[in-house]
Length: 150
Image 1 (cartoon, rainbow, N blue to C red):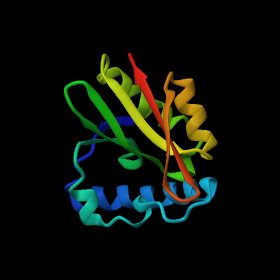
Image 2 (image 1 turned 90 degrees about the vertical axis):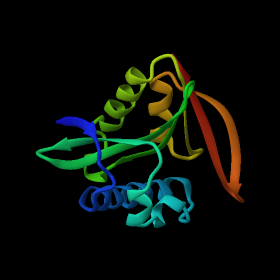
Image 3 (image 1 turned 120 degrees about the vertical axis):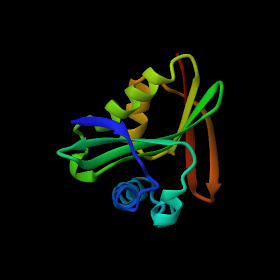
Image 4 (image 1 turned 180 degrees about the horizontal axis):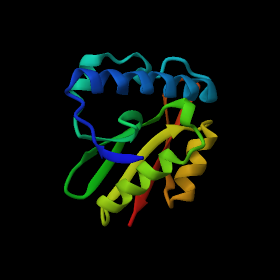
């Protein structure tokens, strides 16, 4: 397995990211009981023009998961963390998050997930993230903000 920066401006890379993203967010939509997660309906153009940096995990040159982050001098926001559902439970999200924690040591890192997304919440907690805020962007949909300081 190889971890490297994704050139998401390239059509083929953006297309694969979008496929993984839609499949991963379909699973989250089921978990949280909300089908209108905006990322499920993004386009290739959105992916090709994402702000920040994306890092992908590859097996035999095939993208199987990725993380996208936006950074500033003191903070890092994880804006996307998507794993091909075929590879769920293979610790790919752990690998990507640990990479982010290592390369952004000393910064405040934050991420959001649905209150009812148990697998994501357990993962963030296991890696030392703590719940820091809870809000309802849509009626009946609660998101939790997790933060990590190293």
